[in-house]
Length: 153
Image: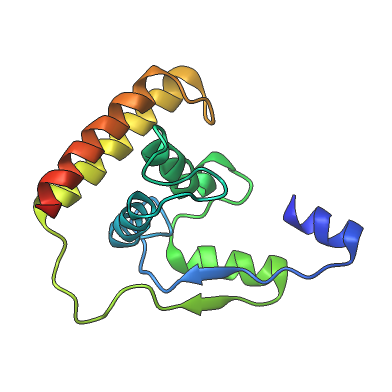
């Protein structure tokens, strides 16, 4: 899709990805996902309505997080394969630091919340299909927002 847009407009695309180790099933780490969620839940008045006022912010972020799992033609299992695929498709890749290398480990409560959200997302998409925000997404957002408020206090 992006390649088609570049061809038709004669534009260039340069993928920019966080410098992240990834997981067994996703090219992005849970730490990176936590940072993305934290940043979205802190912002206000985002032009795309992806901010703390959005009732579906958690769900939308998980859609982005699982973008490569939904497209089997570009899904790759490891971070190295992911980066190689991007370089092959676009000719280059920019990696930006996202996390401090000397950071402390993610608290278990945050990790558990993210894993629970990922499991709920998978259950929801298995039942309703990907990209359809329905009843379960609101429950996920409320649960995450409540846990985020507890950790902020």
